[in-house]
Image (tube, rainbow, N blue to C red; front, side):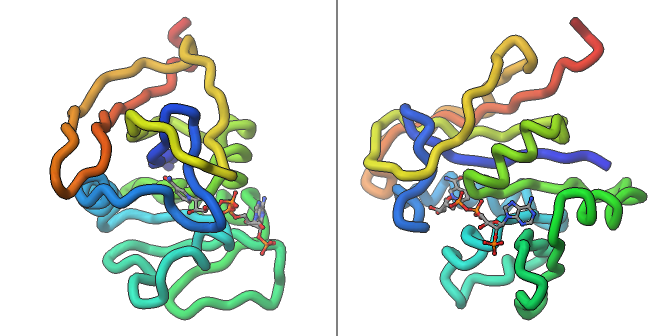
Length: 172
Ligand SMILES: NC(=O)c1ccc[n+]([C@@H]2O[C@H](COP(=O)([O-])OP(=O)(O)OC[C@H]3O[C@@H](n4cnc5c(N)ncnc54)[C@H](OP(=O)(O)O)[C@@H]3O)[C@@H](O)[C@H]2O)c1
């Protein structure tokens, strides 16, 4: 089973505010969609609720929500109450990637538990007023390569780079 993180953060690692996103960057949304299509997307209950109703569940992906609330239900989504339950369920999954799509609490736990094989990180070259952040990572643990730089234009309020990080476990 391969586990990946996909996230977009600002220059201070900010990822959200008031349970919403900080920017509108259509090319980054397109990258998110194309990268996660046909795979499994794992999200915290707050992230799920932040997605406008008309866009959820995210189409052509298996949507998985983590919540401690045993009564929580969401149409078209699988619900788990711990990372252990989630990992047990997908233990034999060898075709699709499990994309951890946030938010902050879910990213933090996935990294602390050393679950993550690779990360797709969009770095937005601007600072926003955020209340939710992506954790600090130790760059020495990861091999980093740039996928693409996008410049500011009429549809994109900021320049941003998309990076791929691959875990170096066992190699150093
Ligand atoms: N920029 C980006 O790439 C990006 C991506 C995603 C989200 N975001 C932003 O991130 C913010 C939301 O992040 P957040 O940190 O506030 O919340 P979150 O991580 O989306 O969700 C937290 C919730 O997940 C559940 N949960 C957490 N750990 C769990 C566990 N181990 N087992 C079962 N359930 C667990 C709990 O739900 P219950 O309270 O129901 O128990 C908890 O309240 C929003 O602003 C959103 O827009 C940004």
